[in-house]
Image (cartoon, rainbow over all chains, first blue to last red; front, side):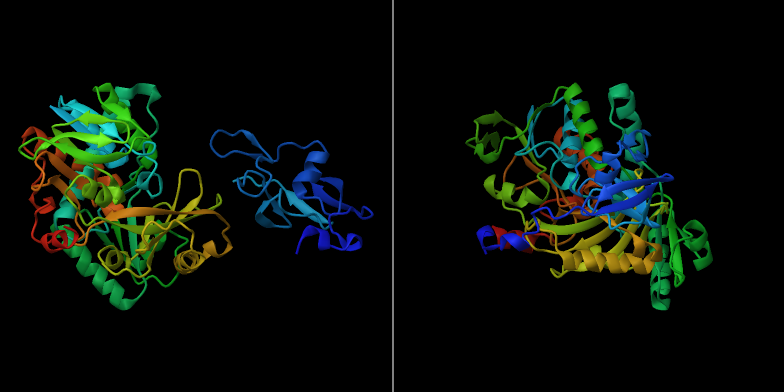
Length: 100
Length: 392
């Protein structure tokens, strides 16, 4: 199927009305838009680093942005190793730094 | 005397170091980058635990001593610029999970102990005190304090750096295409896609590609690639301190079966990730990641360490182990072409065995006394003869 066959009305790429969602991070409630990833919401609120590297103890955050490098992992609702760049925010997530 | 070493993996690097330090004019040629083949796609094992009594175990015991010395020499020689070899004497822990496996493991360790291996038979409770996260169904265990690991690409680069300091010249991205011979049939030079390199001695250290290279040099050798897959988890809060093996590992390494075989090896790395191996299958040089193999490895690892059920995989990689039909490396001259030597076929043990292989090669080239008897590794040994006829 070519891209031209998609009914424009149902094309998921077209932005619909934005729907606000929130997550909590370090005691703050951060607002984003449904469809954004955890990394995007953190970055949009000025948080550029949310992890510390294991050996050199340097700040880490979104690096590759496509799920390959695992630098941006966070704990979401108690689940470890969630790649912030891939997880889309549904609303109400409790996001924590993952230090180990 | 001029020597050309073909292959800049860890075996070629170690041999180049030993030869150049023995005063030989040494050139290393690799068709790719240094340490970019098998040396970059393995686990960096320096093991005695997986070896049955015999020549390969003798080689491994010598390698345990030689790596400790070599690591200190490299650090001393290269100074602060030396890459960290990450040589860790972490020890191996082999566990059985059936009653018959426990009996077989006891008899296996008794044979190894008689051959000079340091190994302690443990109760399941002892095993759990060494590795608290082990599954509860352990029936027996053995601890091998000599098992160690090192970072294979760093080690290969350090060996090459040391070889360069002793005068060796390294040419990468140059493919060897053939051998030029003197009137008496002996080696005179290797031909590459760029020209010639004069050589009185040519060493085939091309790992799993050594069969292909040997054929191009006029002395076919039945080296085959055997693929192994390793899974890498994300960093985990749990630490597996030893190299922990399921007791069926020994059977798999000694098998000639082409079908997939897996046996569990689990260990933490310095970075906090956990490596899960190992599979062995003969599928040529197919480097596609096979999900069924990954699933089989994962299932067995979870059975050994239940906490791995929650693990996330960071990546998986495959490497090709150079394998000879009689399960011994070839280290020494090829009687068919005077001046040609081989150092290949170490299968999954090449990282550990590289330095002692280099000692043997240097002794064979210079006529010095070898550190141990090279006869079992000769290219014209009886167990290899029928296979040489097949490829000739």
